[in-house]
Length: 420
Ligand code: EPZ
Image (cartoon, rainbow, N blue to C red; front, side, top):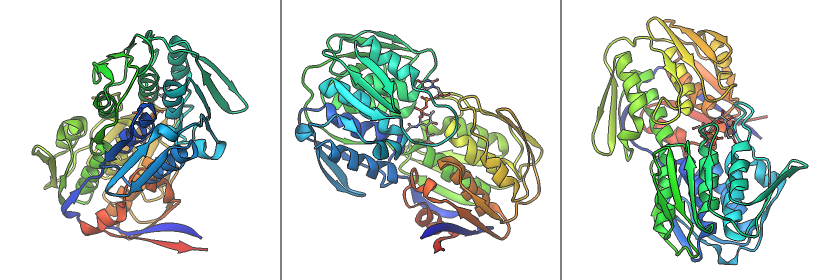
């Protein structure tokens, strides 16, 4: 049976909601446990499809995994003998490729098929392979599969040609137990990079400089067990902030890190949205009209590409013309064609979108094309007049834990139904 989401728009979101743990940190920290020589327990994991996929993958390698959704995940890597990830498992998520760095670091051998994940551009992995080669690993891609092998990994300098979150994470994983020191130049600085470094260090790794563009990793022979709670999800926090503004509501988001949200907060304030922070909560209200603004996606701490799509929905009814420049991924504006079905006035020129504000969106049947496109359609449905049917909502389940429950608790009229 297929599912669709039904939203009757127009209800202002009001009340308090707690954000879940971060998807993009969870999918890096879970594979990292394979580097440990003792069991680890991870808390604050979001119960989403990508996390469940990694549980299956670690079990397929022979690790013992106890997973209590919403509570904890304990992983004992000592029984993991495997080094191959099958095609279907590799395809289930983008982050399956972190098993390359983790297995290289663990046993010097990894075979993973090219990953799945959102179709938002070419998403090559040349920088990952460049990093592995610098550490002394042989890499080969053949038959859709990536093989990485190394008798011994030796620390080295890695200078990334582009800032890459995945590449930075994969090299950190491979370098954690390499012989000697690895220095990553032009490293990504996202919050989940810092979170992974903190987790690795809690196991006894020696990672310095995460959050800057130079990360130093001094390889360690032995990594002990650790108990660790991942950081809250920066993109879920931002999506909820945008939904609160889009419905002219008044919402307090608890359990977030306001400092991670600064680029979005600045843009919302520029639009005339009221945003106030406390140490672990953000309140979003709208009193007057929303002004059009321009968005240019950048690597952290710039405006996150993952929030570009939900933000574009909010901009469809701002007063004036907004321009979005998507500089990270070359095909991340497709969702606007779906929102145009709801009355948005949008023109796409290469990786730029020109959005002319209209007074109102109207409900329509629309289809998700990727995870954050799905989030954008939910925002559009919440603000539209009438009923919006969202098809392929399983994309949204990959990155948002119980999104309907959270939005319903804030007054949204949103539900899911099966259909033939
Ligand atoms: C991670 O993807 C996130 N996914 C993405 O979030 C996020 O949009 C992206 O980082 C940027 O923040 C996960 O963490 C699982 P990149 P990743 O490597 O690692 C180019 C979501 O919605 N590049 O930083 O794939 C690449 O083509 C997802 O949660 C190379 O050229 O992103 C892109 O243009 C979507 N060669 C740019 O770098 C490489 O070897 C940034 O990609 C690697 C990347």
